[in-house]
Length: 151
Image (cartoon, rainbow, N blue to C red; front, side, top):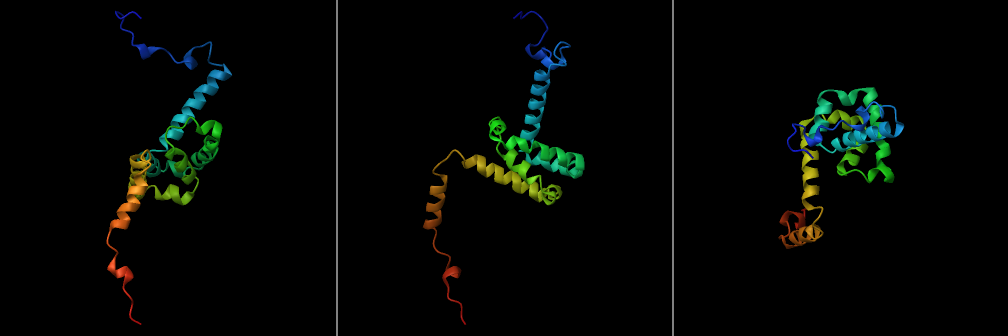
């Protein structure tokens, strides 16, 4: 590589922009695959979902149909490319009109964000749940829970 040139290593044109590849079905399929993969993975982001809901994009029938179409990403052959598993969970939830409408609510966005954070915080720690159970057992019993109610 010539370091004296002003060209940046990432300035190479994409294969689809080359006139000889513009009609090649394999190139077009790969470009579509990459675009849809990127979009599906973006669905893992609760802030992005919230923004789509606030802009009423999730209420558009064409977009709802597109979300149904994207369910093929749940198949094993495609799911293996997903880096953020919450994307597929959110894709499932987006099939429900009530969920799409509720995403306008900041509280739901916060709930999704917190649940995702807690998952990522603990998913590689196999002893997390064991420690959690031990902590629960070490707590003194709640006196109100064991009290006998008068009749």
